[in-house]
Image (cartoon, rainbow, N blue to C red; front, side, top):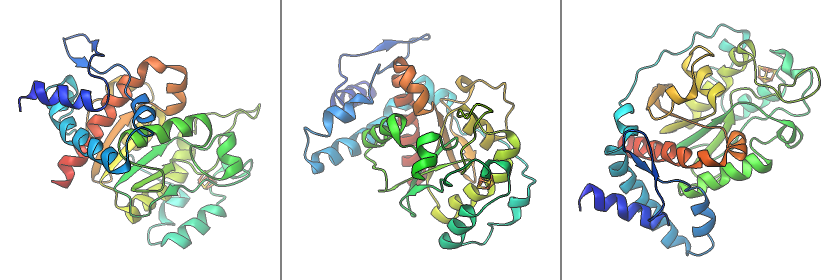
Length: 284
Ligand code: SF4
């Protein structure tokens, strides 16, 4: 089958055959794909859904091989940020119960003051996929689970579109485990110091899970993990396979951003295709 036919088959299978967006440089990408999960899930038996996903993953490699994403997506060695914090030496050899207990009682940074709950992470402890968000918001702080509410629902749909499910072969965690708030009690991004203090916990989670691929959800996460300047636009990070903790790291938009920028769903699908491609290549 030619690349073009594979691409057509992929788009047909996810229900996007005739929908295209013409990008600068002539690359064609699907406009909105995430809704395909909502469309497919109720209409297909589980076995057929898995077949669609398997085919999409396989075809996604071909799709990306001829797209702008693969040209920008050659593996890029990125620096690992230097972490100097009290927490940096703490979780190195901890097992799951000890790590969870340590996070629950952690007072290493000031975010402990306002929290109702630490938000440790959720999912399959042996997941091949790990999705990393910024930090807990109001609902997450109350429930003690990452990505609940509308942004969490959208993330769940993203997982379904990839053939994944919260708790099954996917683990979801944040770079800080306590909710950052501003002086008015509103959510805010974590500071560099807060990230440095908390990052060792995430690093230990990665060591314990040993995922095949990491997906950074949002600019703050990507910049924090890759040790890049805050001025770096996310557009320079998307579309490339970075490395973190000796694993492929793909950068995409935060689901909360997508809730307000629905037109960027197609870009997120392109990022997820790149992640599936990286996953397939890492496993081959
Ligand atoms: S954000 Fe992380 S380092 Fe700071 S108190 Fe919470 S668990 Fe500890």
